[in-house]
Length: 241
Image (cartoon, rainbow, N blue to C red; front, side):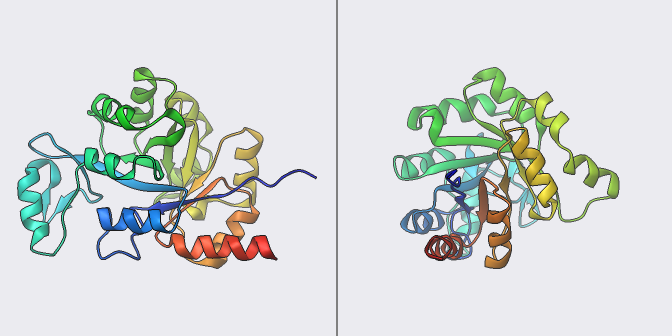
């Protein structure tokens, strides 16, 4: 009998629904305690050229790229949390969990690669983006690095949706190794088509067990979730059933 492939649990911005703030050391610690397979997080660059782990483009109406790292933490400190640097997260997670790194911008791919290679082997991390150019640049720097292309948004027109539902050409051109689609794109046909072409599918962002179960049955490779605890419990129940 053919052995079923494991569907990985990827903790979105750490265990973001279980921590007080996403993309914080607290969120990553919780994800690691739960034994998530990977932690996912976002990287941006500040005005003073620090690489930080932060999702939103802006903080209190100002672009992250127009704030220094000190200014960012002055603002977030008033709300009771601190924004970690990329290097800090690499050190904290080293040897404990694999990484699913999302670059929100282009222009600092080489720095990211140089940093991550200090702490991680090739099979311990991947780098992805909504920007095709990011995967292409990463592959030009080191083609052994696993890269991914994010597709799908909450609100798109029909033409954009069709291009995202059929991402194969983009994947070839940017040399990405896997596709990371919004869960609404992942029909049985989509999952089957990717599987036939041996393109791994990392689905985002799913927090309810009913949808998780459907996706596991569609044999996706990974599910990105704010609730890694829910998915881990579901997988245990499905294994016992």
